[in-house]
Every structure is written in structure tokens, then in C-alpha cells.
Image 1: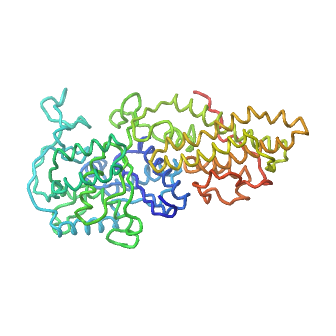
Image 2 (image 1 turned 90 degrees about the vertical axis):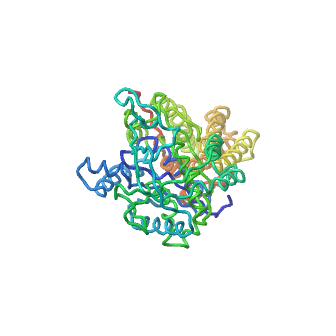
Image 3 (image 1 turned 180 degrees about the horizontal axis):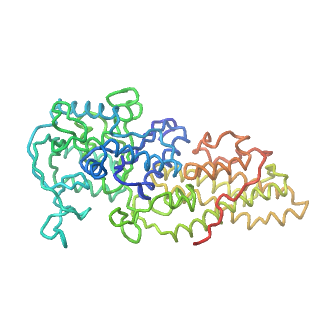
Length: 524
């Protein structure tokens, strides 16, 4: 994508029926990092997140807690979901709630438009419904119950009995879009990523699509169908439309034109809604399909997917209290191949924190700045002629920046961080081999010492820029300590795609004392 282009990216719209766990945090920081990178590259960037607040499950939870559905969702969002963004240092541009008027109006306009285009009809429906999934279950996700639920049909995901529903509903002609969808996947092989997710979607559509029930008449906690207010719009259809209503669909056409189409990052369990139903709805409305859908894997704890019912959900603040938000962001974005399942363990996070952050990056920054203070009164020295070892570092910095940007284009935050980390490793090795403390004892080596320390400081300048989308807090401290804020301006104003160009930190920039970026943590 060229600099200055539009980059609209979304997290899934979260269902706030419970408090967020590290899985929600994982998706959110991944999207935030991608957005920060593009924003810092000069692209017209917009990051959206939000909450999906309608549906039967929410209505039942509110009743169980003795409050109205609106009071219930207001409490959940205010006490748990807004604070999550602060905890994880997320710089989202918008937060949409499906109970907001801007959303409800846009949803009604969209549904009316596809109704008028002949894509919706009235019918009757009888099927097994899972309240937990808010979904009529396909055969593949219906299993026989065991134990207390013996003799009943249960949801394969929630292991809870399914409800047989018979309703007069409105249907969306999803089956009519199978060929167009298959053509989309063929023409744009990267529309669904990674490839395993794409293969799953193609196989699903090739089996044939059933029309989708898009309204419910058994309860009223939802957005009324515009031509028949005795029905509310099915919660998933309402939820998917947030990606369009938030940027102005039905209310601000100029904004919608500017931002749409966007990129969606979702967990693989909601892939079909985003890669099949959502593009079909857009085709029905005569709108462009998304730029792409990226499905990441699950976070496993003790070998199992996190779940509320099994009490394996870990709150992000538990980890942030110990490690800090930057280390949280770094760990989840680098330790797991983005797109595959990954395991979390406290021991692994602690080991990586010490090896990579405290001893690797943090120590490199402290040493370089301390030596600049000791040998050059804290002023970045003027480098002399570059030797082969110095030029090798410069090549590594240039390659790392280019490779990281290419990885971000593929939505691979893990590969981007690994590319950037080659600079950390190279500089630590360079200091060991150059032995600046030995050079400092010999006046004849003064120019060589200056070159070595300038190389370290300029390498750190590149690292601060490249890592700022991942670790905004520690890189800001480093940027200030390098004297780069005064010399070059704000860190977030540096073009991340230009970070690998050597020689940007001017000689004479004044370094200041740097407290440890990642203090050691005692293993409790």
C-alpha cells in the first residue's frame, strides 16, 4: 500500500456478556499495532473497535441481574470494556456500540435497501438454536448430549442443550451468492488469510449455502425490522453492519467513501460470518466487499481454548500489573505466529521478558546511553570513517526495516518483530566485539570510539521508531533519552517506512539518563 492511502482496520465487534480475557486483548493489540504502523507510515488510518449489545443472551443476563438490557450493557461496557483499551495502551479512533442511534439508523437503512433489491423474503423456520452462539446451528456443530444432558442435542462449542425454535422469520437469500463468493475467493486468493482459513471457507461454500434467517420475533431486544416492527434484526446481521455504520453508512456518505472497504481481523471461530455472510450482504447492497478478512488462532491455556465456563479466562490486567502493557503487547504479538493457535504460560512470558526485553533490548539501551554519558558527556559523537563492522550494522538496520514493513503488509506482526529484533541482536554482538570500554583507554582510538557509540545510538533511534507501534511506552522513554525528541520531533511523527535510512540522529543530540526500560521481575 502506498503512503497516504486509506487503511481502515477493525477488531471483531466484541460481545460484552462477560469481562474481557487475554484472547480479546490479543486481537485488540494486534489490530492496534497494525493501525499504529500504518498511521506512522502516513496512511489515512482508522481503527475501529466496539461492542455488540443486542440479542437474547444479553436480555436473559440482564433479567437474571434484575436490570434492563440497556442498563446491563452500559455497566459491562463502562466497567470492563472501556478500561481494557486503557490497560493495553490502545489508540483506537472509534468505539461503536450497537445500541447507539447512529448504528441503529444505518442498520435499518441497509436492511431496507437489500429488501427493496429483492434479497429478503418472508418464510417459516424450525431449527435448533444455541443461545450462547446466538446462532441456528449447522449439523456439523450439533452433538448428542452426555451426563445430565443425555438424550438431548447440544452445541458442540458450548456443550449446552439446543432450543428447537419455530418462528415466522424474514430470510436473506444467501444461497444466491454462492457462485459470486467462490469467484471472489478465486480472484482474490488473499481475501481470506491465512491459507488454512481460506481453504475452510471455500470448502464450506462449495457444500452449498442455505438462506439465512435475519429476523427474530420471539423477543424485542434488538433493532426493529423497518417494514415490520414486530420483528427485530438477527443479532449477527446487526453486529456485522457495525463496520459500515461506524464510518458513516446511512449518515455520512463522504466518510464512508473515504474509509470503505476495510480489513477485518477476527478469531477463527467467527470466520464464516465475516468471510461468507458479510461479503454476501455487501454484494446484495451493491457495495464493495472488504479488503480482506484475517483469522487468527486461539490462545490456549494448559492446552485448552480459554473459556468462561472452564475458568481458563485470564484478565489482561493480571499480566499488565506484573509485566507492564508494553511487555504484554510484545509477548503476545511475537511469541505466537499470527494466524495459528498459540499457548500462553506464565513461565514462558517471564522467560521471554527477561531474555528479550530486560537483557536484550533494555540492557542495550541502558549501556549505550550510559557509555555516551561517560565518554562524551552525554552528547551523540560525530562518527569517523565507517569500518566493515559498522557498515554491516547499517545493512542489518535497513533490511530489518524493509522486512518488517513487508511482514506488516501480510498482517504478520510476529514476523515483523522478529525482523526488527535482528537489530537488537546485531548491536549487542557489535558492542561485545568493538569493546568500547577498551577503546576509551586509548586516546589514539578516540575517533573509533565515537563511531562505535554513534552506531549504537543511531541503531537505537531506528529501533525506537520501528518498535513504537508495538511498545509505545518504552520506545517513547528511549526516544526522549536519546535526545531525539528535541533533534527530530515526536516519535509518532517519524515515518516508520523510512526508519532504516542511516544517519538521522544528528551528532550533538543530547542523551539523558535512562531508567531501566524493563526492570527485572522476581519470579514469585
